[in-house]
Amino acid sequence: MSSMVITSGGGKKVNAEYRGFTIETDQSVKNGGEASAPEPFTLFLASIGTCAGIYVYSFCEQRGIPSENIRLVQHHFKKEDGRGIGKITIDIEVPPDFPEKYYDALVKSANLCAVKKHIQDAPEFEVMTRVRQS
Image (cartoon, rainbow, N blue to C red; front, side):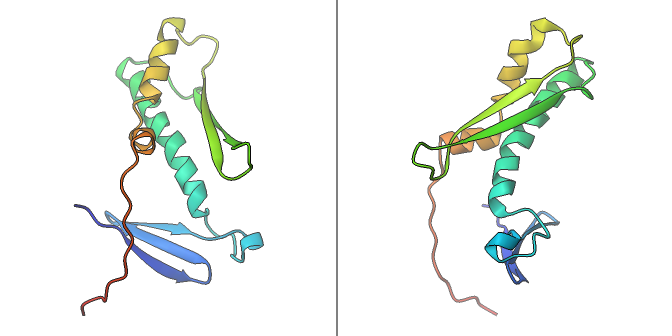
């Protein structure tokens, strides 16, 4: 088991402490925040693309392929009823001189993303209230 501690940062700010890092979030001005940090849902979406990205960039690094001109563009499509995200696509954009023989391998690498796998095989969620012991 690993644990993440979530605390209030004041106002609409909420922080997560994990492995020596503080991950700060805030709400947009429209939602009553100061827009001083990404909203939690934005971080969720970013975790998908950045996770795919580390696999793509690692693939290139392992083969000595320059990756500075490679970028991933993630698109979010709403569900038909307008509630939530119904589809996420990721385009891996490569420069013209990128070896075509690796196109499919890049896609396979991106699909190794652990975040994506956890969404597809969702964990069980349990939320409860406990009295903190001093």
